[in-house]
Image (tube, rainbow, N blue to C red):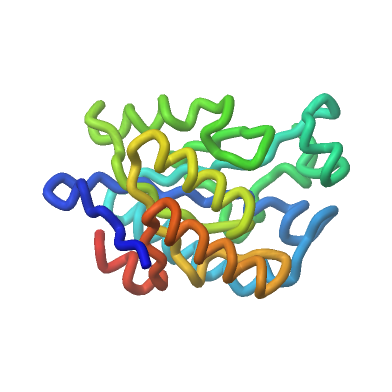
Length: 193
C-alpha cells in the first residue's frame, strides 16, 4: 500500500479543483444520477476553501466538434451551450477561476498550471484538492498530471463519483496507489484549512 509523500507539510498551499460539475454531466447528455449526492459536499468544500482564502478552480469540459474526445462520448459540454456550464448549485464565484479543457486531464493544453503558479502571491499552490466527476476519468487523469508536475493531491471521496460504484472505487484506489493521493472525506479535508 502506498503512503502519500507529504512533501509540502511545512509550506502547504492548497487549491481546490471542482471538475466537470456541468449540466451535461449532472442532468444532460452524459448524466449520471450518481452526481447528485456529491453536489452538497462539493459545495461545502468550495465554500470552506473560499472562507479560508484558498483559490477555487473549475476545470470543465468545453468542447468543439474537432475535439478527439467527441469520438468516444459524442457531443457533450459543447462550448457556449448550457451543457458546458457549471450547475447552478455550484456556480463559480467572482474570485473563482474557470479553466476550459478539451480532454480528461485538467492540465492538458489548458492554462491551469499557469494560474496555479499565480496563487499565493506568485509562490503557487502545491497541493490540489479534487471534487467532481469522474473519479476514474477526469479526476484520475488530473491527479496523474498533477503528480507528474510535482503537486500533491487530495481527493474528497464524498465529493467525487463515477458512472458505477466499481468505477468510483477503482478510480480512488488507482490514484491512491499510483499518485500517492490522499483520499479523505470532505469533513477531514476542510479541517486542513
